[in-house]
Image (cartoon, rainbow over all chains, first blue to last red; front, side):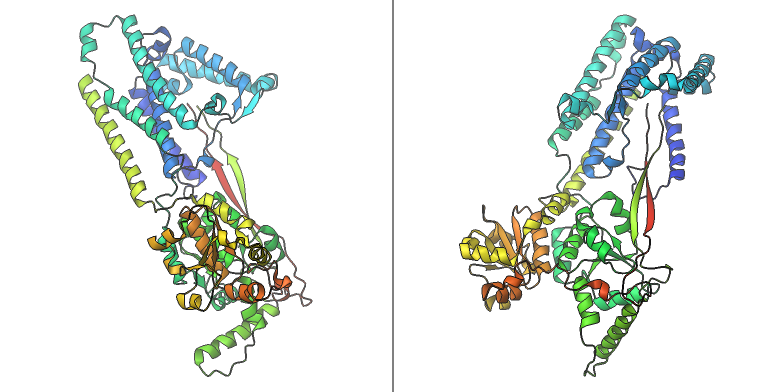
Length: 406
Length: 204
């Protein structure tokens, strides 16, 4: 479910379950559309039945409009979509073989399986042929390899090649699809010599066509992404929190959390750049530099539910900027270390902790700071759970493409 | 039969269109009022040129081109009353986004220069103003008191490149790690958390 539910709720194994459900639906629709019949499928090539073209074109347009709108609304992460890289030679040769096989056998791989499960013998023979083909390809892979991986173009998009924008291309494709529907209907009628009565009884499709066109026009009018998204937090709300100083976590609290990590667990996030982080970081801190804070790979860290997360930098400035940016993006349980590292060192290590005050709170506070100073100076500032040294947690991302296809 | 199917198709498309329009409408209503995308704002604030260091301020005062800025003092009115930069207007941070304040600051062609008794407050205000559509927003490094003593009254060359975000201490001196007594910080191998991004591929 990668692009739709990116937070990692759905793991790779659960993905298989969803794939199974979607597969059931796909098979059902194929069968219901009559695609288990090789006569219907081959009809495209002889001109008496264009239902295959209509179904797949409609599916493609629907998926396209849906994807573009989901992208606009921020429901889908385009970076996680897998786009088949283009190998020009294998596309040409493979396409020719596929087309030839389609005319000859009357099936494509997916529909042959649909045909086979409802007991069509020709579909079963087709599947047998498919496996023989796979076997030959596997056995003689070395011979095919230059063609198979030749003319590699990477991820190319039609609209880039044509030099038009994505949305213009989408509109163009919708117009082409509607024109194809009308033209194929005319061809079909001519080949089948459809009587006029049947033609007149045909329902009108102007509403679906209008919706398609309207969707395309809307995509043309809308920017690629809105300037703000529905899940963002308003500037006024951020300013209220800021001016009430609710975004600050006191130095003593942070010191206490580091010393008693198990009692008051916090996640310290260093928003300075990697160089400063390598030189020094608070015990147990992770590094998310300010300029990368909106990157997808850090999202799950900054959104950990129920986890108190404290951003810090050398002073308040960088951390406050990071806090605003992240809070606007909807990460709502963040605070910053009041005073930053400068404030921390000043308060805990530099200030004199002897006090004449007999106010209990102040006395306790100073006593705690003196203790904390000794604690950090003596080198005990190591989280209890990690045995050796200051851990430098580094998040790295592994991309593991999953192979699929039909 | 054809008629029934056509009706189903018609109703389904209409439902689809209504749901789609409804979602877009909700996005328009619920989305907070920002004039710049979060990514754009982030790019603007991570630019080092946004911060005006004491040396630059001194040069600007000497050249007399401070007047081309809309100077905004973010402190409380009573602090502002005790003295501020010449020509500055007073907008306390809490009132930054009020309509009147925004109108006061919106002078075409004039970049905004923010300062306060706390550099982070000026930085925060700059983030919010940029996200509200102001193109050029700069901030003065350091707090106003520091600027007053080190630039306005008597320019101290030592403070030329000072800013709050500068590390004032060698932090490693204070936090001794790994129990080593010599104070040298020993770092162990990083703990690496591996996150898997699974790209899915489909077809047909």
